[in-house]
Length: 423
Ligand SMILES: *[C@@H]1O[C@H](CO)[C@@H](O)[C@H](O)[C@H]1NC(C)=O
Ligand SMILES: *[C@@H]1O[C@H](CO)[C@@H](O)[C@H](O)[C@H]1NC(C)=O
Ligand SMILES: *[C@@H]1O[C@H](CO)[C@@H](O)[C@H](O)[C@H]1NC(C)=O
Ligand SMILES: CC(=O)N[C@H]1CO[C@H](CO)[C@@H](O)[C@@H]1O
Image (cartoon, rainbow, N blue to C red; front, side, top):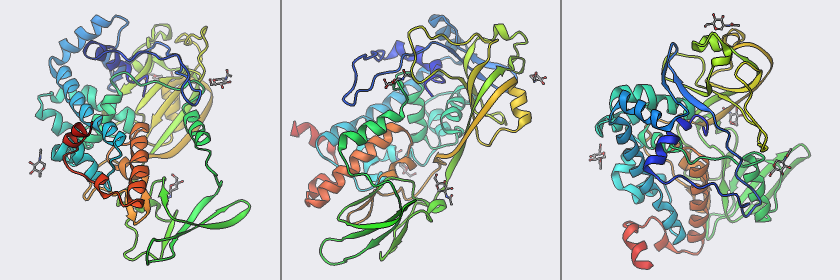
């Protein structure tokens, strides 16, 4: 998304202070990856409806020329949502936790926030005066690139995704996966490399005890735990992964499905003619977003290595390069032949990237049973690394507060006021 985001990035700088690149290594020894410039554009199947230029003022002028005040209104809408969302960090710093997604969202932005999980991005934006044309051309393209969904998706998830498109995203040198391995190491946790198959409730009087069975190549194993946190999707499609036994009423899994996403890494020569540039040397873009036209791909990005050396430059447009194509389904050979003049190799990864975001009632809960929690509840409202980190902290606080019966710290109303007076 970082590349696709650049269209907004340069503009966001006008309204918000630019995020300063921090060169110091983090607590787990990670650094920001160096950014490599590259222009974005939005393709509608025939033409580019919006093109980023090297000249910042011209970008701004074009957006104003094409879309008038819509851009500013979108910006204000996203900023208002983000400002409220950021309250969670203050609440969590004071130890407050929430047992359900609805309680969490209500504490951040009251019923308007909860409603944003039920109404569409388009509806919310039209209400604040953003034009349908801007939604069709620009907003949809960003949502397609990040979620593979349209402006009919819920406003809350949409706002999070549009916020990501406004600039300050960055990557970790060596690959973002280093965050997970680094954090895991930092916890000094005892990791059992196995797949959990069954969680059984052992004791129903006093504090519960959970019997967790797991298996790996070596065989099966099991252990007893006071607190269990499930940090994997748990929904109807996937209910077979973990079985719950001895729970009455039975454990409630989310009624929903996940969105399959296909990433194809293609090493080859882009077919710039397809995008209206018969001379490949003149093709100026590193990142292409697409509007809602019925198409086989959502976004196309020119890739940079996970470690960007000081001397690294993007390949010339007529040279072979590595491109990432995101699509809802695996690309057919004919589709690859449309996007690329020729290619050396294609590597494909298909996975259940995130929930299909849609209106959902009731919203999922973090508490599945007394001391059994579901971290992934929040991804049904919005799905990103940051949202998952917020959910993880919430579940940790929730388990802690419940264990010590500190009920004042759970599902409290009017936290803005409480947090102010506690300081
Ligand atoms: C949220 O939705 C409910 C039901 O549709 C409505 O009554 C309420 O006014 C909405 N609240 C806000 C703040 O939009
Ligand atoms: C890439 O960066 C990571 C993290 O800074 C480092 O550990 C790794 O050695 C680097 N790899 C190469 C090939 O330079
Ligand atoms: C490239 O795109 C053009 C225009 O859409 C198309 O005619 C051609 O078949 C595509 N493929 C190749 C390999 O040129
Ligand atoms: C039945 C089903 O859809 N199972 C899926 C559960 O999730 C895993 C991991 O994403 C998939 O690999 C399974 O296919």
